[in-house]
Length: 78
Image (cartoon, rainbow, N blue to C red; front, side, top):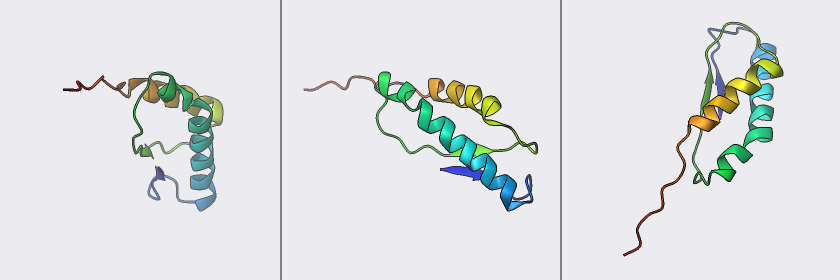
């Protein structure tokens, strides 16, 4: 889920632009979660900047966020 505040970006065109860029960056980098065996989680991304950013600015930030999500720990089977 991607959320962009109406207070920060007034025009719907701008909010949708950011949402599309964030979703595409996630789609292309979700393998970072899969290769570290992170269990499926619900992720909400909230865009708080008042500036429009392009894909090449958003992608490295999203990668950093995905790498911070902790990997799964092996549960003990008793």
